[in-house]
Amino acid sequence: MITKTIRRKEKKRGRFRRGMCALLASLMLMAVMVLGVSADGVVFPSDSTPTDIYLDGAEVLDGDCVIWNSITYVPLRKFCNLFDGCTFEWNGGTSTATVQTEHGMTLIVQSGALYIYANGHYFYTVGKIQNWSGSLYVPIRPLARAFDSELTWNGARHAVELLSPEGAPMVAWASYNESDLYWLSRIISAESRGEPFEGQIAVGNVVLNRVRHKSYPNTIYGVIFDRKHGTQFSPVSFGTIYNKPSASAVIAAKICLEGYSLSDSVLFFMNPRISTTNWISKNRPYVFTIGNHEFYN
View 1 (cartoon, one colour):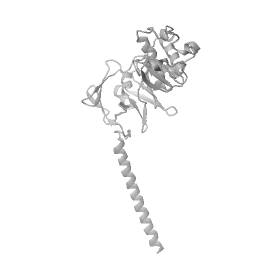
View 2 (cartoon, helix red, strand yellow):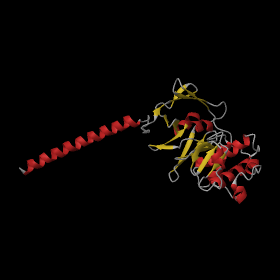
View 3 (tube, one colour):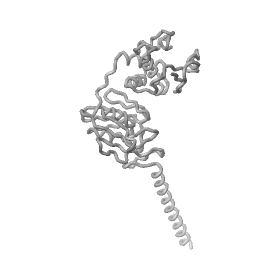
View 4 (cartoon, rainbow, N blue to C red):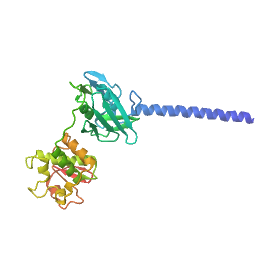
C-alpha cells in the first residue's frame, strides 16, 4: 500500500511538472509573439514595429531592425559590417563598444548614451542607445553619418534607404573652430552644470540661435558677452564663464556645432526658482522645459 501511494504521488508530481513546463513554454511563446524577436533572437520592446533597410537598392539586415519611439534602431555590429570590415572591442565595465574599421575610422558607442563618437565627431542619437538581449542597437541616422552614407525614408516601402559613399565609408576627421568650441562649451557648462544632457544641448542652441538672429551679434563670443540690453548671461557677471567646462558640456557644444538643434527658435531660458526677474516668462512665448530650465522663443 505504501509503495502504491508513493507511485501515485510521483505520477501526480510528474504530471504537475509536465504541465508547468508546458505552461512556461506557452508563456515564453506568447512573450515572443508580443514583444517581437530579431533573426538572432533579440527581443524587441512590445511597442516597436519591424522595418526594412535597403543599401544601394538591396534589402539588408532582414528581420533585425525596428522602429521604436519613432526612431529606427539597427544592430551596431551588423550595420558596421555592411560598409567595412570591422573589429569590435567590448568594455563591460563601461558598457562601451569600440569599433575599428578597415579604412581607419574609430567609432565609440556606449549603452544608454545619447550620442556616438566617430573620428572626433559627436553625433546626437535623439533616442538612447539600447542594449537588447546583449546586443547594442543604435538609431540609424548618426550611424549613417559616421559612414558618410546618404539616408532617406521611403514611406511607400516603410523602409530606410541608404547609399554607399563614393569614397572611403567614413566621415572625415572633425575640425571645430577653436574659439567657438572654447566659449560655447564654457557657457553651456556655467549655465547648465548638473542639468540633463538634453538641457545642455538646448542652452547651446539658444546661443547659436542668437548668432543667426538679426537682433544679436553674429559670433558666439559676441552673443555671450552681449551687453546691449544689460548682461545677457549671468556667468559673465559672476565670472564662472571662465571656469573649465565639464566633459559633458564640451560634448554638448560639439553636438550643437555639428548642427543638431532641439529647437531652431528658442532664444531665452530661465530657471524660475532662482531667477531674479520674470520678464522672460511674461514677454516671450514658452516652448518647453528641460530639467530646471524653461525655454522661450
